[in-house]
Image (cartoon, rainbow, N blue to C red; front, side, top):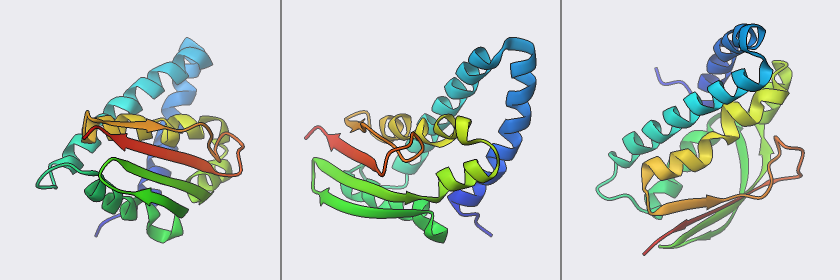
Amino acid sequence: MTLSILEQRRIEAAFAKGIFEEMSTTLGESQATAILSRAIIKLAHTTGAAMAAEAEEPSLAHFAELQERWKMEDALTIETLRVDDTHFDFNVTRCRYAETYKEMGLAKLGAVLSCNRDGAFCEGYDPKMTLERTQTIMGGASHCDFRYTREA
């Protein structure tokens, strides 16, 4: 049985919450957040590399196909703007990841637990890729603006 990424994140967040609270008590919230952030970025980079290995050759087309995994269980509502050899642009207009973290009392950590992964994931997937994002639902915006580019 394969878990959706939304369910996986819910489980990870419950576990991370306990660890974060313990680290915060010992180290302070700022240092605990920094440690959690670094760990999640490393995991995202590794996950991106593993998913790139599934493709014959990393590409934005394959990268865009991977997005379906994050959309399972209607986890994301997405408006695709552009997909070609060098660009993958879309807006997320609903994010159940953000909703889930809020329900769990983790709204403050949501960006560390999820949004933080996106840039590192794409770098792990293909070092020729970059992500530009200026806003997120998790940060209070109406939508997330994902703009991936890949060097030709």
